[in-house]
Image 1 (cartoon, rainbow, N blue to C red):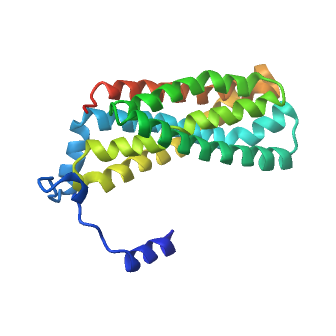
Image 2: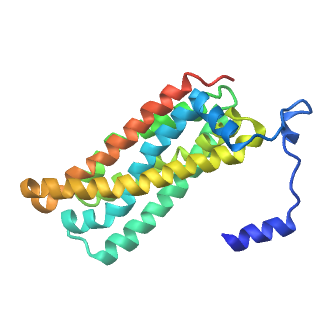
Length: 238
């Protein structure tokens, strides 16, 4: 990352900020305090960040506990769960991101609300699809995993595009960085820990299958995120 950043810094000319927004665009610089205050006053951005935090919890919980789930519930080897399952996860993730960009890019031309309502609908649908992943027998478990990841990652491109359009020009980089920072920190700190705690709580009743029930939180968290995305869509203006 540092190498690529240095390469871009020394070889790519900084574009004029706001050049795509017209000559009357607001290109003033804003201080950190003023920018943060604007974020809190912007209902759309605030709701998107909250939803993104819940989505981050779902992402990180599933990524951390997927392999132990396959080992405990389906008795797959570490090699199979990590290589085949990991490859499937990666392909599904790329598919979801590209599909989200293509579909919402088309629908968003007609109505900007699709940029957040679309991810809200797919995040909502990810909940029941994750139930298929958790309770279906092999090989349907892998089918459920694939489509769950497609639906979970569908949001990435559209939400980033929306964030760039609802904040002021010189706030865009800060807005995107804040969005991903919150999603990553909350997701990585809460998601894996929550599943681990629930595993311990449920182990006495469900034994090795406790992880199956604790991972239901992944679907629940994704659906909670969806509620905030759809709520944010009420405040988006074309």
